[in-house]
Structure formats: structure tokens, C-alpha cells
Length: 426
Image (cartoon, rainbow, N blue to C red; front, side, top):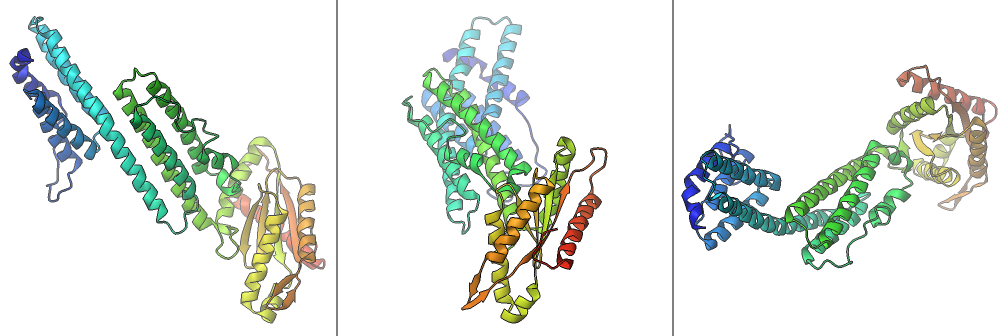
């Protein structure tokens, strides 16, 4: 240790010359540090550590530097690269000066700093990571309607169990589920039946992030159980896991927003605003694969009479009742939209015209046979349905006019069903 004091001036010079320098264009008028100010303070603490001359001072300055680095969210990689840069520069100077007697001591000096910093950084980082995930859980717990965030809640609990495993330092087999298909969150991903969400880019991104996260977690467990792990590697893996976890949360939040805007508040079916997006996607798939799909347009017969006779509140009950018939009769993969008023549109993926007509007839029959009791009144109603199949030529461009053309075609079929007596399929 004594010999290193001789190199303190050169260490100071190396830190000043080769550590990043950022100048803020804004004055600091609050207790919250701008990142540029944080980097400057970090450099000061870093230099104080390297110029510490006693074991007690080194321990104190190491704790101050690591605490500040984590609090200001300065990455471990940044801290490590600074240490390596200074060490390499100093060793280069010694080599140029043919000062070979103390190269081993200088190298050992920086290696010991690296080991202390890394061990303490891992310990404090895991504590901070625990607090961050507990805070995320508390925010979800306060939500009135969690929707898909309930699944993210399960995911965060899994993350916390992984952190606890790394913290316990026992290398046993009581680690969280590593198979992405078997954890609580993975089971939801694989069994989700909300068809309009399954086709979104957000859902697909979540699946990829989740698989990658579990792959990293498996590496964490394997590496950790080897009992020969380096804290730096664990820091890198756990930081990456935290990144994937946060991205999953962001994508889940997007799904929540889609769910909020996509559902009709009365019937809880999809709204017309989502129809164009899903229709465009299905047209692209049809064009690429040559597979047809079908559309049904449903309109309740004499619905105005129901409203005039029983009032709009009962009319709303009838609309909800018919929505239930659609959901019970159709398949999980089918998309059901409240298109406006008493009109409903159904998109049937990979469904031929004959299959669509059969499904439409089932809807007609179920509606005619149903009885709705509202305020001691027995209400019976029927529905007319138009049906078309869609198979787009792979040479034709797809745009909004294409969608409008198919809407007009199925609307014509519905009009024909009305003209021919209602309570029928055309």
C-alpha cells in the first residue's frame, strides 16, 4: 500500500484527463441533481476513493461512491469502465517510464478497489431493486380496476422471489419457476383468449420479453449456484432482467389502454374504432396466406318498437342480452364488435362462407328461442344477419377503401335479409 502513495498525483491526473466531463447548460436550483451534475459529483467521489490512504477511509469512500452511483442511477458499467480506464492509463504510463517494479502493486491496488466496489454495488443494487418492485406492487394494489395489471402483479412477485434467492447466498434449489410457460404470468400468456389483444404487437412483445427474462433468470441461478460467480456478472444479468421486467410493465399498460378504449361501455364488446385495425390485419394475413375469412353484420329486428314500448333502459338490457348470445354462440377466436346502435359486426378468422352461414343461423335460432324477462315483462326479439366471405387478391393493395368496400357488401346482405322478411340469414 505504501508504494501506491507515490502514484497518487498520476492517478489524479488520469482521473481528470480520462473520466467523462459533462457541463450542464442549466443552473441547479433544486435538491434534485441533473444527470450532468451527478456525473461531476460522481467524478469527485471517485477521485476521493482512489486517493484514500487508510483502510477505514477506503471503506467509507467506497460506500459513499456506490450509494451515490445507485441513487443517481449511474450504471455499474459506467463506474467499472472509469476504473478500468484509469488503471490502464496509469499502467501505460509506468510501462512507458520503464517503471516495472511497482506494476504488480498498482494492478493489485485497482483490482482490490474493483472487488470492493462490485461486491458492495451488488448488495445495494439488490436492495434498491427490491424497493422498486415493492413500490410497483403497491401502486398496482391501489388501482381500482387492475385489468391486465393483475398479471403483471404476479410477475413482480416472481421477480421479488428471484431477488430474494440471490440475496440469501445459500445456493439451494428453492428458486422461482424458471420455465416461462409454467410461472403464473406465463400461464396467462399461453392461455389468454382475448383475441383482439393476441394479434397486437404489444402482446407479441410481452411474450418475447418474458422468454428472454426467464432465459436470463436461468443463467442467474446456474451461475449463482456454481459458487464461483463474479458479482459483476450478476449485476449485469439482474440489471438486464430489471430492464425486461419494466418493459413488460410498459407493454401491459398499453394493453390496459387498448382494453379501456376498445370496449363498448354498455355491452363490453369491441368498438367500431378497433374494427378497421383488426380488419386491416386480417386482410394482410389473407393476402399473404390465401386463406379466406368471413364477416357477419347483425341487426336486431324492430328494435325501435322495443325502445318505444319499454323505454331505452330496457332497450339497453336487450342489447346486452344479445351481446351475451353472440359471445355464447361464437368461438373464442372470433371478433365481436358493437358497430352502432343495434348493429353488430362479427369477424370470423379462417372461416369459409358456408361455415359463416352456419354460425349466423345458430345466432338467429338462439335469438329467436330466447326469452328476456325485464320488470315482469317477457320480451322476445329476432335478428337479421348478412354474411360474406373475404379473400383478397394478392396483387391488390390494401387501404381504407378496401375495408369500406367489404363493409358495404355485408351491409347489402343484411339489407337483403331485412327485405326478405327479417329473422333470417343472407
